[in-house]
Amino acid sequence: MENEKNQPENKVGEMHKRRETMPDGKRYIIFYTFESEEKDSAEEVKENV
Amino acid sequence: MSELRWNPLLGEWTVTATHRQDRTFFPPPGYCPLCPTVPGGFPTEIPAENYDIVVFENKFPSLQINPPAPAVEASELYPVRPAQGVCEVVVYTPEHDSSLAQQPASQIYKLLQVWQDRFKDLNRHDFVEYVFIFENKGEAVGVTLPHPHGQIYAYPFVPPRMAQKVKQCREHKKKTGENLIAGILKSEKKDGQRIVAENESFTALIPFFARYPFELHIYPNAHAEALTDFSLGQLSDLAAILKQVLSAFDKLFDVSFPYIMAMNNRPSDAGNYDFFDFHIEFYPPMRTATKLKFLAGSEAGAGMFINDTLPEEKAAELRRHIEHSIFII
Image (cartoon, rainbow over all chains, first blue to last red):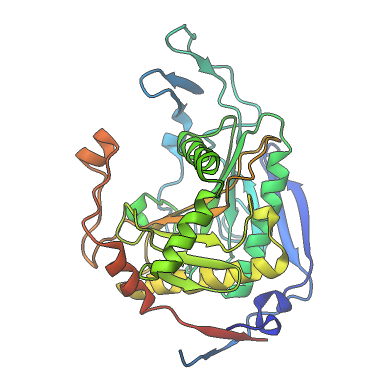
């Protein structure tokens, strides 16, 4: 039904993470970001099923 | 005070975590701890003006990397252990008024990669025996922060329900030579009535033995023991089927559908789990648009679930709301 070209992975690039200590000085926080990020402009087309 | 107390009647641990009584409870507008921190505004848990997906240690953890010593003495009858483990919060999006169902498939795909990374990272702790990724969604299941988020608990033991599943899967393989999840999937596909959605890599269904009216399971079409076994292409298929079933849930009764989502991965030790298959389970409490299923006498007291509905009929209801969409880039 969904060919490879149309899968959501194609609009998401490589994942990167940045680990920091939270302001309380005790806990960690990890920011995940993705390369080639596009805001969702996916146009959905309903198939006839 | 926090510790693990042994329940000799059931042969399982209970966590006491009294500090959790003070956790944030339905904060007023503008004070959501999971929103970005805006300049001059309330300092949330996330010290950034924007973010994509963020993971941090829970401020009110049930389990801690460096737990306090137990506040009670152990005995032969009542063993006690420090409540060691990790509790993380996974914030799916900076959008406060949203849900996982409302996210585009591309954001769900990113989240799956984050979950993969957390699974790998948390398994590196030598005290961790099981990494449990889950989401509680909606007031009906006790959620106190509506901002879209899930949680991860890294336990210092394999929790009882997972241990029972591993045992069942191991015994089935020994008896039949077949993986139990693969066997269930084969049976469900042959019958067809309870299938809700499927793609090349995954199948979503309400199983023959469902305990909740809309208890939906997602199984991989090929053997995989953990989320980390999937390729990016398979993750893309998982994102697509999650988007389909979560959207269908919301359309069922035209509400933001509450659920508990439980991700079932293999235990964290280096043992052989080739008899076990990764799967996701949803336990939604709604049985109609106006009625909830409660865990009452039989369920809570006897551990015996009574499903007032037929999985075949509920699967058909849910299937009617599945959109077969193509995501055009």
